[in-house]
Amino acid sequence: MHIVLYKPDIPQNTAAIIRLGACLNLKIHLIEPCGFNLNDSRFKRVVMDYKGLCEIIRHNDFETFLKKNKKSRIVLMTTKAKKIYHKFKFKKNDMLLFGRESAGVPKELHQICKSKIKIPMNKKTRSLNVAMSVAIVAAEALRQNNLLK
Image (tube, rainbow, N blue to C red; front, side, top):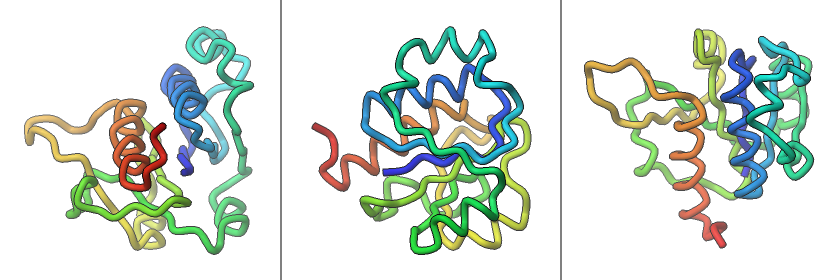
């Protein structure tokens, strides 16, 4: 299972997702540019020694990511989706794409991604923290594919 972060801009969230990746054996893809340096003290404080326990693949941009993953199904997490995540049938090698904390993903990516899902929320709220969203959706995807051990 793959987690893809599109131009993440909060170091603590990315670090928490990498820790999650290490614990649940998820591959983490970072689509550059990140809004911070991986040597940032806020990133290091949260990631601790988990960075070395998780496979992290960095991509210079979204086009490079697409070229390297042509055959993969990309599943976009978006509040604009109609389908709810737990009613979606995940596959073992899905690329679960999460947008920037500050801006999500651009319209072009919404057009490219055929599979779009959301986490249902209170209508008075805008969105969950991206690290929480990754944990919720990754757990369901792993459960469906019997990858939780």
